[in-house]
Length: 199
Image (spheres, rainbow, N blue to C red):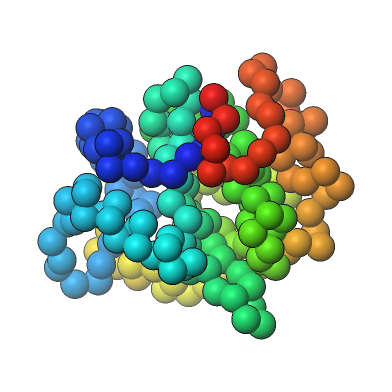
């Protein structure tokens, strides 16, 4: 399992996985409040990379056995007196429930709060999204309560629960080490930056 930069050559795999998972993802994914054309994959990647170059975002492909199985994005990176960002993610329904997403979120959080030097990471989840709630609960993110009408999803403004961790709340050795100790994954997963593939 690993995280690496999302690339233009991921187009075929990304479209195939997304196409199979439209119904699985639709209730949880942000949508524009007004009709807007869907971006072609190369345009989406180009926009993500531009924001990444400006230090506003980090888009990662989530891989398993060298196959793309999802995406994790560190977004709204803000420096100055805030030093914070949020993380959003999705995974192929076929791979859900295997501990892949908690591992990816732990790795990205350690990277952001350690290597990158951010102070705070938050994850915003619809209260009905039980699977995603389990991800942050497994990792010990702090529940900060409800944000009313926080994101536009599936045609309406939806409430979200906000979960957060700050750098001083990271356990000794990091979030990934604690998650691995608790979950005893079957496959080895070495330490390192999520910018490098961990397969």
